[in-house]
Image (tube, rainbow, N blue to C red; front, side, top):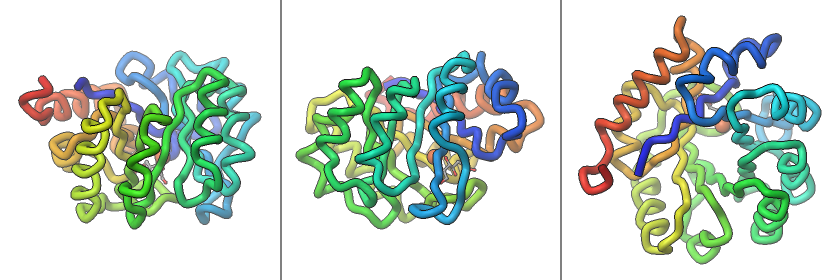
Length: 225
Ligand SMILES: O=C(CO)[C@H](O)[C@H](O)COP(=O)(O)O
Ligand SMILES: [Fe+2]
């Protein structure tokens, strides 16, 4: 298990997204793009036309986190727009298998996101259809919220289910992850780390990425090193 860093541009300068991604290009693995529709979450960010242009302009592959209603209808279009990973919420989707298959058929990785109060067990049998599970460690909608320790048992349980499935799924955490919390999530089994304000709240986002990666690698469970 290696640590993958997928910094979120949610709290970056939206008037210069290409430049903001450029600041982390040498220090991160992917860029996490938070798509919010003002309905599934009480915040509105950006949508398909912006993702399509970013996919062309970004030196890093796009990891799109869809916080939208009706992902059945919209998620495949994000794969077509060039996102290399498309994650939709379990709470919003009607047909998770069909939607995951439609994302994969368009050449992107398919992710399933779980809000803090959503259990993972009902999805255990579906994991083979996905490439990633995203465990939210805040209520989605806004960056800069405090990390919810209460989600850690579910994170551990998700790691167990992924290992038992024999699959190669990535386990992503999103929300309130920074130098103070990364050790906890990596010890609990996360291998793919979203960090928004911890990266773009820093004067040197690339240095913040390198520090986070070092702290994450140091916390990796011994057997995984
Ligand atoms: O999905 C999100 C919010 O819903 C963001 O990815 C997340 O909040 C990142 O920001 P921070 O690290 O500051 O919590
Ligand atoms: Fe996110």
